[in-house]
Length: 334
Ligand code: TXA
Ligand code: MG
Image (tube, rainbow, N blue to C red; front, side, top):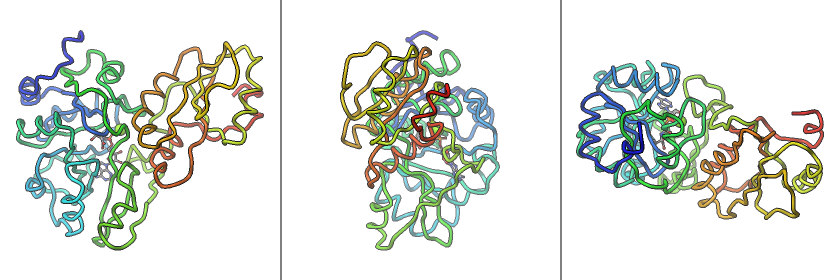
């Protein structure tokens, strides 16, 4: 596939989807790997191309709240409140699956994930297609999610049929996910919509339900969104002394820091991170891809602040990392 398959022709993308082909499309969060949610052969292709285990559920994207009851049943009132407030937008709702939905879509689970994205190209694609489109992030399984069409090409090369180019994704990290048990929402994945946002809308506090290492929920695996080169998070106080200890080493290191590089060096590939969490989130996955150099020994990331606006970023960095680095580990050749 040459770059001619990167395009902005929505009508052509619809033709491909109707023919059971795979179409990557932009959303406001990350690019999705789209297929007709009613075509089991196309859905199986998504799992094969991504290398994703077949019991890991997909999100179905729709274009209108009125379509919800074609995909889900027993929809709680709270789900409608969130849908009306946050759709179109970076909010995914886990609901009881309608019996018409093929079990392959939901990884054989009784629940289904649904969202209306707000990227104009995604919305127009959904409207013209007229039905649900499955859309896992358009990266190979476990790798960093794509925020540009070029990232999608990098992961899939000629294995997908068409890529709709919508430029750089606005938010840069995947949607917040909410589930409902006893009709009360809880958050399963952190994203741009926070617990505070939802609690404010509902008028009572809701909580994050950590599903660490649940094999059914890929974004909840503790190792996910990962570069190939080992990534370590480094505490702010340890950061500068650690960097100073690296200047005489022979290896190359990739570094993501809030500060500019403190001195000249040859062996540090340094990127300065934005201090605003929205900008940081937007650029994060592209930056991780740039830091993931074959010649790099490790990627060192200065840990991010602990307050609300940074929680989704802290979550993704934690999952991308091999853990927290302490100074002795580099000497032991980690
Ligand atoms: O922002 C996003 O959500 C992007 C864009 C393309 O829409 N999509 C995305 O899809 O991140 P994916 O497949 O990479 O992540 C989907 C996540 C899974 O990791 C899982 O946590 C959750 O959706 N999920 C899907 N179905 C579920 C279900 N039935 N129960 C619990 N979690 C589910
Ligand atoms: Mg993903």
